[in-house]
Image 1 (cartoon, helix red, strand yellow):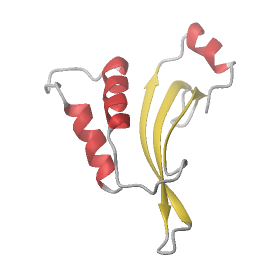
Image 2 (tube, rainbow, N blue to C red; image 1 turned 60 degrees about the vertical axis):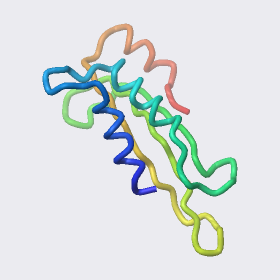
Image 3 (cartoon, helix red, strand yellow; image 1 turned 90 degrees about the horizontal axis):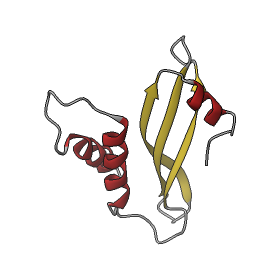
Image 4 (cartoon, rainbow, N blue to C red; image 1 turned 135 degrees about the vertical axis):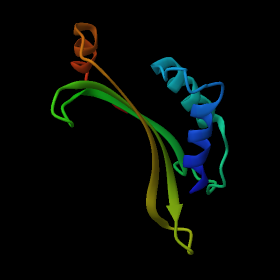
Length: 110
């Protein structure tokens, strides 16, 4: 699963030049391509999943609307039992706007 981060990074570079701004749409499409990639996971329903959350947070001091796209892998021990999760995040932040604040009131997350 360690290669999953490299795969996401590669998807974020597809078709992008050094002069191209990384937009929300560009990052979303890259994450969706990453989500379609298959990795060697256990044949169980929760071994490979997609999660998201959004909201207005002030992690760095000032409030920013944040969307966190996550791919989560279940890592098993040698006996096939759950050991831990590995999560690969793609976090997007933008300035707060009334329309985004209204979304936050819905309690985003899955």
